[in-house]
Image 1: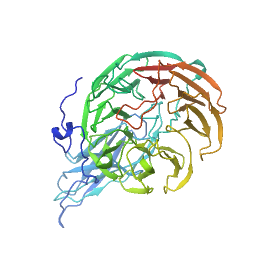
Image 2: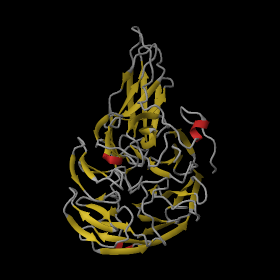
Image 3: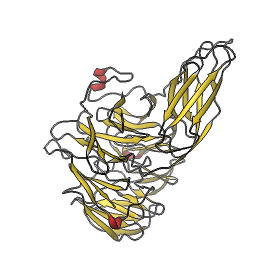
Image 4: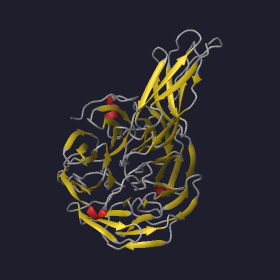
Length: 502
């Protein structure tokens, strides 16, 4: 596939293709406008779901029926997950019926409501909530550091470290002198039997998105992402891959075929998107900064909220909100409906930021990694509860936090102290990932180590390539990192990608 002109929501093609784009107005997307009169006919909205229970990455069809004592209501219906405030889709009524299908419902019990907006002759109405139990399924890696919390913990499935061997290695990037990470391969996503990465173009700006067969490493499909510089980043949810480039173009692709589904212009981007429960969250910069929530179904911007600057921070998301962290520890929590829940600020501001991590009742933020002291904040109020030391996003399991400092990996109590063990290597560079009681980290020499989560003892070593790059959270390049999913440990090493499996 080739990069081509696209139709963008709310902007001209010329504006959409400009290298640095100012964000759209940072306000919540309005509900459908209605004009009702005192004589408007009352309506009733009923919602059904099929099936009545589901698992992650499996489709559920929601059907809203809007009726009235006389006549057939027209207009649109908004489908909302009221368990967290996420607006999932807006659908137009046809003969009083509107439908919406999604495979992106997050694990847990979802509470879906359909709201009819009304018209000049029919009054608005809302359905009763339909509760859908959604089970966790498979072991996908869906964004940077495995999951929307960015905690590096692959809780599903278990790799057997003692039997890990190299399954395949592919060279995707070229070589050149465009910049430090010329031709580098990004962190991978792993879902539905495929591995997804973006790769910097070696001699020019822009990048490509690759979908590889997880069993063989063969290329299933590829598409150019365009954009200025080499930055691009990915997230996965419900059968779709979401890619953002430096110019702030967020595009949805069908994970199975690479078909483009929609594209929308946001602000300049240097942070991975995060997809959760039918919504993509993206942190953008420009003049100030904006955090956007975009419907996975159709690319509609549901809300945008202003932040101080806005560089480099991939939103950490769960049902409690979306969290971001910027220079000088300017940290935010927003509800999934777009309201600011709290704002942790200091006496300075600046450019840059980093990816925060959610674990338990705490948020782990690093601000601008070159200058700020990493903080532990309470999720509920944003108050300071502790500090920690890590050059990368920390990883977590049920008992420990795993941090990287001066090339060494340490297991630390989640409160920030004490240290439980340290693996002294001196050349470790990747953010750690955890699965099945083993912590994995890669070194600049190209080696990958598996360490016992309980003792720090080395239980496995593999070689991914000649050189593994550290994650660059402060530049317009692809963000590197490892992922565990689908029975594989997948590791980018420069312009190569290697998968280890049992």
